[in-house]
Length: 433
Ligand code: UD1
Ligand code: MG
Image 1 (tube, rainbow, N blue to C red):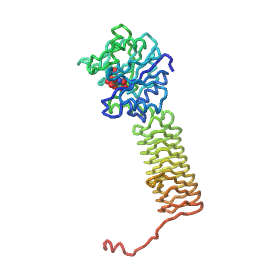
Image 2: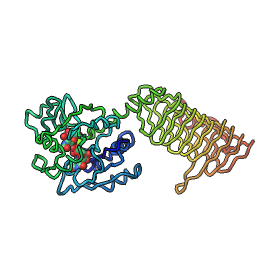
Image 3: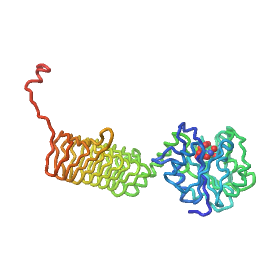
Image 4: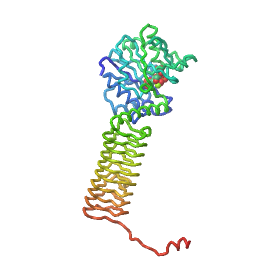
């Protein structure tokens, strides 16, 4: 934590280039809104964080209230002062330096942001990208390690458009310089907006130092379009997966795996190709085979898949789940369910085998009911368990049974119509071949 730093996060813009009714900063990367990441990293550095909102402000604030309680929200006077410069006006800043971040930069990390706090005499330290193609960014001219010019893409002449040094959009201001110069901003430019970048011009004119800090797109990429969103998510996913692999997790073809940033994977776990791990999921010493999806669930010493789906609030321990098995809101402890089953709202105990095609009929169209299955139970293939239903330890069901009664220890439950054999019926129906 830094005791001389205030942070402003800009999140008022509409994000028209996203072509969406959802505000730009609420689009998600690895399961969380872009703005969540900016605030999370900012909180590691400052106790004075201001988030600037305008478009769908209450929706954005509500989304962030789920995660953070100690953030100052400011509503930009967007009608009169649109633009990134307008966004930083009228904020009561506590500290000597002020870091300004964009809410559309989900890849930033606090370790990178710390570098802006140089403690020298610069009026501004600003982030600069050296790119092959700077399309979409404001252009920056750097001479002798000092910024000498800054111009927005829409205000560039042909020569300036060729410049590949770009403004990444993060600035550390001397707070006094910021407060003294904000009133001088005007909207005399192509977009008729108040640009924060004009403060750089003011500093240059006043012979103040504007220090460029060279940063890379890996951390400072701005998201303006759905394509940028996808590109940033790939970078973010690679970070998540690299971290797990360095902690000993095996991943097969990691480019095909998707993992929300809230997921935890521990121990000697194996994640095969095309696996999706979502939400509040924990994988401990487990093997998730190809094509499986796990959401808000815990797997411990278990293996699932290929092509298994573990839906929210499931806890699997020492359990084997095979292909085409769906589990929802169930506790499975030492269970085998190898093929083609639906196990919902159930508790199933050690040594129990679930035959292929078993269905817990948990929903009657109005309410959900529980299925409780004890230890060492043998469920025959294609059993329908009509919940609420309890099967005690050490009992069995016959293949194809539809059960609406509890089964006690030692019993076999069987529902079957008698088999009728009709001689020569085939020939009568199809004729002799
Ligand atoms: C801005 C910079 C550009 C830089 C780029 C880096 C300006 C004028 N330009 O352009 O030099 O290369 O970032 O990504 O600053 N916002 C508000 N209020 C507004 C307008 C925007 O809060 O009135 C917020 C947006 O929500 C966003 C951030 O400011 O988080 C940047 O806005 P955006 O429209 O994306 O600016 P760029 O055109 O990318
Ligand atoms: Mg932007």
